[in-house]
Length: 270
Length: 324
Image (cartoon, rainbow over all chains, first blue to last red; front, side):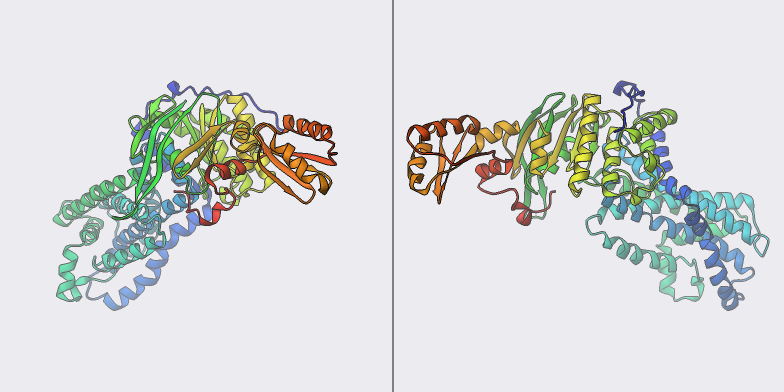
């Protein structure tokens, strides 16, 4: 039988520090990152995934579209890959929360003094860390080949993606909370939104060659503004109207996503 | 420590259907008590616990937990209580030790203190070797001990346990309870738990609150509930020729109920079996009825529930809806 240690930590409630929102967000974010950092293999595979897509899709694009894109295919495609990585990474992240609903970990966190909004924001911000890692790898691998790196534009581009990603991640969490009692719905809804958003953003193939209605539909797709902005930024042009529109699209997505997400989180125990 | 008045929770399922999960529960728990909330599935146990732990807001009524109103000051309540839910508090993708340290940091410890606290709890709950193991790789019993450790990181003065031992085999249940009771002694904790295990409520809790259909239908020590609401059953074996004579004598015992005489056995329900048995045997001998064998059957909490509701707790699992 183990001999019990005498508690050496005095946890009188009055000594607990005042709640600090930034601290709560950091705690949630650090917790979410732990399994990623603890598992180097999954980290490695996650990091090289965009490269696989780039390596397999890029040459096809180059072969069939090389002429019509006017110039360097990679300059056109690398920013899009970064947006795609953000899109896939953040739109699926609700599944992690869904899993923690099922196991009970989320419920435990709801009973702790962590603020409800930090539970959402910390989770959404966490997705940005692997994203930045992936972006750096993609850029590092592509730059020696045919990609012209403009550091200033790339940094603004990543910041823009982070804002957009937080918004999309929040929507994903809100979806997870909404469907937590029929969890299979999560993937159905996520897929239903993901592919139209992706195709109607001109991310993988230019919409210029598509029918008129697609171009009109793209005008209502916030993602297409983000894709345009990223392409402009990665070509080194920071102060331009596509960047402004992309910024607006990202901020609107983030504000809406956080609003919906935090509202969902507040009711997530019901 | 806890005081509720007419605590009520309705769930609106659809426009035409509202489930009245909890219908006006008033309950007071004093510091240091160990209270088991016992009832069939769907009785409202978990819903009550979720209101007391600020997870859901009451539809009506009030609840003060650890000195604060659950609706007005939920964050004050959250700082002061520990909670072990039906699921696993520790994330399945995480390492056991990481989750404990993280839980300490959440409650305001710095990393060094959180680490020290984690080491203490891992040791106390016999989990030290598993600190670096992923939670999903732990056995059910180990995971449940980890859940309890998670609930104790901040040494709360009030601990809620929602069906702590469901799904564990008897050995793991006994082991978990050893740990819980030792922790309770060490921290002078008040413990409120829900259970549908009769024997668990019976042997562990000092006070049993029987809940059915969203209401408290009985509230006392297990002993008092059994004595008052069920009573002991005496069973005496005699020669068949003396059967009716003995049954008559049994019926004269103070508070005798349910006298049954079949074959060579007379049984009778009385309030205090150990006192009534010698009395009945003496009376039988004085009346020339030799008693061959005698037994006192102590009632179970299931007898209590049966007497209160006309239903058995054991049978209820089939038709009861899942706990909300």
